[in-house]
Picture (cartoon, rainbow, N blue to C red):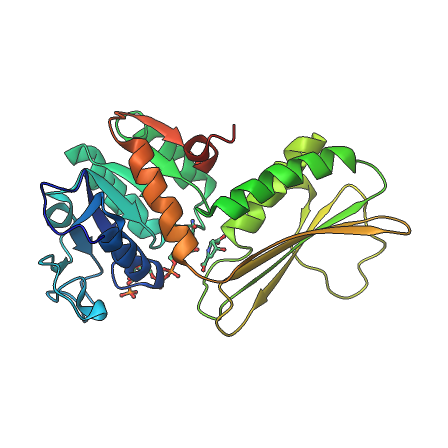
Length: 275
Ligand SMILES: NC(=O)C1=CN([C@@H]2O[C@H](COP(=O)(O)OP(=O)(O)OC[C@H]3O[C@@H](n4cnc5c(N)ncnc54)[C@H](OP(=O)(O)O)[C@@H]3O)[C@@H](O)[C@H]2O)C=CC1
Ligand SMILES: O=C(O)C1=N[C@H](C(=O)O)C[C@H](O)C1
């Protein structure tokens, strides 16, 4: 059911990066949701879509223009969904804080300092932030925690991820989260045990390391495999995304979770009741 009347929709949602791959997927999901309404759409001032209707790519009119002014984009919204770039997200969050608008952050590639700033902003507004909004990936993270504890010795751990040619950050936020979950399960610190590249005479593998391999190509939506390689056997836990719709649906679950919340930093485990 499309939510077209402001009265019928309970969640007024603004979308940042409205013309991006995820932005468009989110606008489509919001319009079909039945309980959410598109209340604002933002993009960079350089975007050719500025001034166009945010749903024009669907061949319909939403009455919501794509704007570059962040405060104008947030004026009618209760929550922002942001899948952009770290520097954009930080700018958007500053405006959300000022206007009391909650936020769902799907952007990846934040620095440690930016993550600290987000935690600080979450003292004033409620934020759900996760590198992957899909239910399947979040369940996979739980499986990895269990597997890592059970395979703590004798198994070398490698994380392999593949994404489309346009992705700008590596490893993916999801791969890094998988590394964090596994490192925590094993009592290791990912910062000191992660190996992000190998070339030349590397020496034998250090068993305490967690290796990452990145593949970029074509239109791969997002594949992640964690390999636990032992002697005489290996276990592979794989998640493959075939559509960005799962990320959009997870984001709308996060929007619903945030309704009525005033502050706090949450993740998809909170949203999905996986804690
Ligand atoms: N958490 C999750 O489940 C998922 C997370 N992601 C993450 O979401 C982010 C976006 O991915 P995707 O949609 O594929 O990327 P796209 O490049 O397709 O879209 C990004 C959008 O953000 C805009 N943008 C770029 N830089 C800025 C900025 N500094 N300020 C404001 N807006 C900006 C772009 O505008 P323009 O095109 O004009 O440059 C574009 O509209 C990535 O970090 C990705 O890793 C992706 C999928 C799932
Ligand atoms: O950029 C993408 O496309 C994706 N990014 C997220 C990540 O970095 O983990 C989530 C998903 O894998 C798709």
